[in-house]
Length: 253
Image: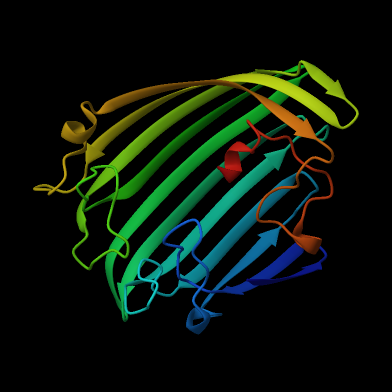
């Protein structure tokens, strides 16, 4: 991957070139004949230091089929991010869409909406995320929790809409110099419903219900310098590292 960024006044221009083939396993390396076959670009407007407005576009060549010849993807996104002066909280609103293309013909399109906020007061912090996203229901293997790789042209058996609400609370138990211990708890509620009927995949039958609850309890251990925001490099990176949610900011999960 190669990324370049140019900052002039309140505008940030970014461009990237990369290989579109997704790895088929932990030890898989990029195919040399796929180098630089995909690209992305982003423009960010920073009207004031605590505000960001961005839009991005990408073309990814045959991501589901490493040898090429699969459907291409075109990705669009737009977001607004607001942060307080003390860097003790932020709010993010984002829209994104991925379209599958065979040549110039679009075959599928999946849209996501995201709203989240995070705030800290003294040693306490809390976050809330609301996500509404459309996802493809792909063909399954004998192991029902695995899909074929590479996917076939007929691998999408349906489409579902997920609405997920996640709440998080954390307490900074230790915060001494470059060492942090932060216990946290997260509760998430997901609602899923098929958007295509008839469908070859019914998520309610597969998961046993159209409402799924999950609870996560743990502790974040941090050593050394805090990470900067993911996806921002060079002059496009923020000057001050942001707080993270469970080892990762919500907006980067």
